[in-house]
Length: 298
Image (cartoon, rainbow, N blue to C red):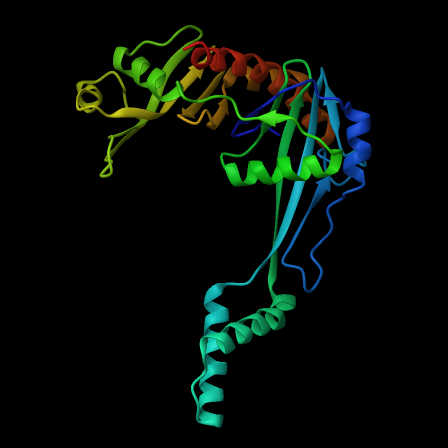
């Protein structure tokens, strides 16, 4: 249940759904396996697992939801190989060249033939709605996957007035922090960063598991590089890497939260997920405004 990424959206107005109404809406668009001829299937599943019937889970004004996406894996190399066999067969049998239009039609036919035999891959994507503070938080670093979830959620409930937070000031602030090797409390600088040069031939300097207050790091900043990613620790509880688009990656909950989890002693999978969700949202809901205000006020 511990999220590894935070892809953030802000609500432009109050979210009108509660856990029960959102459950009703999502349960009408459940995930179903791909049919034999279907390339992709997207729907909603109970976030607490297959033994649960609830399509949402709520705790302390946070609503958890889970989207599932299944796709049929049809490698392009397999299609190309089959196409070449068909083209060769036609040319030898009919003593003629196969044109581009016919190749396209053959490709479509081959894909239709192979699709029912293709393996499937199913991926789940968790998100939560922070009703009190007006955030939609998705456990992905990918803008494409985040947009897929928001699109499907909008289809399910009819309206989803969210926008990404403004990010114009993020890069300059991260650069200033690393240049001075100083960040506002309760943040601390971690052990990872990435810097890029301006211009068409942009060079990249990356440091991982590295002391960032060294001359080696400073020399890259002195050449005019700007920080695109920076590792931070918040309140000695959560470490993460924030990028210039304000996407949080490599989210890790430190020992203090693990100790709290161990004190709870959950007796079932569902109870464990509920406790983890409560602990996670309780802390991350404090981290997000602390982080956001550093860039929003610039």
